[in-house]
Length: 300
Length: 294
Image (tube, rainbow over all chains, first blue to last red; front, side, top):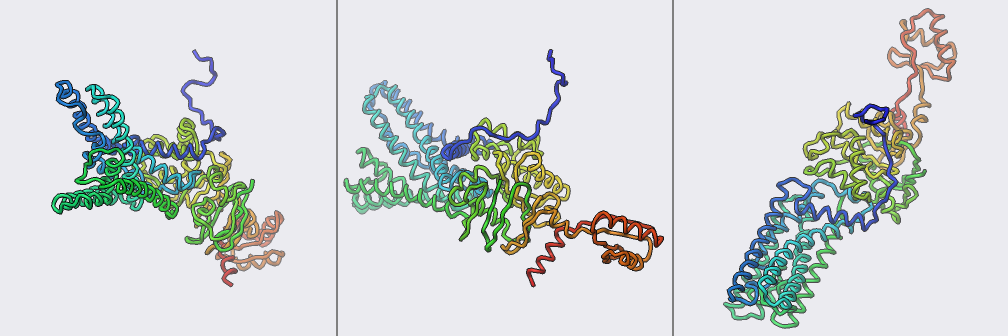
């Protein structure tokens, strides 16, 4: 038994202890905020109900990919197809409703809550700079959206490999789609984070993000349809694609990777393709810039 | 150690040392603004300040790593537990995860939060929320904490506990404190130094002892006509004033006690009360406001 003189089971108040250990640098702290936000976006470390939508949308995104992978394997086994039914680059466009809902919940969760609860002074009175805060939040959101798109793509890719499609072609197509996914993630999360940072009300944020993402696509794609088929002017229809983030990135994919467009019309010429890419990068930069300005000016 | 040397608000210049410093002023006097400027949360239009030797403009991140801040208003998310929040904010102050967990638990215990720290903050009372706010300001073991109205919204018992805690931060934890309040009586009890600001102007900055020493008086109550007793004390060479039934005698040293005792005994009155009466800072403060107004 213990030789200790003090009786067991006694709690000693050892008093206040200082901390002389290691302290993280600014970069380390920003990374901490990034991982914390990324976890928070998926509801990890929060109440169970915060997990419902993120994981629900993750499943909604994943299910078609699983089905497509199975279809690939089965139909390839019967010798009916030699490539996936749905090209990788079209996946985000097909499942964009789920992406929009995911973002509509994730962005306010990441950004609006700190405004609503006035938590921002607690961050900004710490070593973190304002721009670090904006960057970390944006990066976490973009990573979440990228995972949301990339994981189903990976499932499809593995399905394609299992179906013994041409591995070289599949790998190239898959990597191209990953680049597209990165663009989708950057532009969509930039827009969503910016909207969410303007309101402390989660409800407003959710409504505004869904409206902007879904409505812009609905309006642009139906306009494109009208112009391309009814007015028989696919060139103008292609240009209209500049005005919604989904058709914009889709246009970049169509031009850069020479893939099938998910919109009624893609960029009509190479010059148009370059324009789509430039506009995409400009929108991403603009969102990032506006978000950092927003936090530079935020009232505490 | 030297911390804020401040020129802020309306040409306010003050230098504050270690210990517990009270920043007193009416609502809107500029107390919170001063703290926000020191933390870099608000930009001064002109002037400079140094905290712990770090310039607030050039060295903000270094400075904020060594300072804790408890805001005045509600700033806690409702859907996370106190433990999670304080651990997270400890990491945001640069503590590695393991150290953050350990120190969060320690700090929450020190501010008096026990089992309830695992529940979501949304269900906390105001007193508990104030403790969480204090814990997050202390969790990274700062050299100085800025506490903005820590007793806001607390009931009298809660106020006493909070004030005691604030005093312990310096006495037991060795962390200097700058604490604001619009209630002088509170700060007088716990502070070493008091800085009085009004409408962004410095009224006075000195130690609490200085404030109260100058106004030390002896309260005397006798079981007889106070006027006659006053005359007798005055005849013995003491300066006497009246405050209702009380006689206030200027305390000139220990001998004053003897003189009062002797005078009262000679005149044959019953001595009901004989006690040193330290003036509250508030009276000095009011007087100075009057002076400034003139």
